[in-house]
Amino acid sequence: MLYLLATLIALLLAVILIFNALVRKRNAADFAFSCIDAQLAKRFDLIPNLVAIVKGYVAHEATVLREVTELRAQIAATAPDTRHRFDAEAQLAEKLPALIAIAENYPALKADAQFLHLQRALAEIEEQISAARRAFNAAIYEHNNAVQTVPSSLIAGLCGYRTRAYFHITDAERANPGVAITP
Image 1: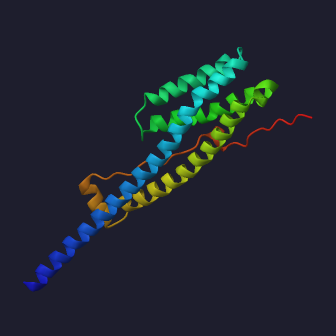
Image 2: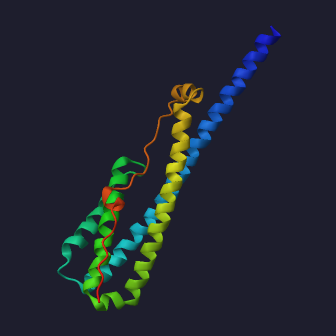
């Protein structure tokens, strides 16, 4: 009887420890996503200023400006931590270099102090987003391993834990950027 009670207590303790580990991994993944979301929000808030400055110099580059503005609106209307949001953010990341490239054709814009400040801020935010993505994917890796490996997969299945999607980059982001060299 004492052995049975000791075995049940040990089993209950193991279940509690595994459940708590799953909760910690889920919370770490949620925290990592919130870090990405904070950086994406910074970029999101920077875009209208960048678009406004470029608009002041460039009237005929409306297509790029319109696409960036539309993507920003689409992101604002999308729920966080969804595949659709990740895809919209990736599309926006593809368009931002085109917005910056417009400046190459306008020397006055390239020399504008406010534009240069926004360009530096955008580059810094993009680096922070990249770091936050790595942290998020590491947290998702740990979470998914816990959800898929025995014995935690048994408890994860009972408690409704599922694997989560990684934050992928697009093929355009993966490609080497072209650099124009002017004499």
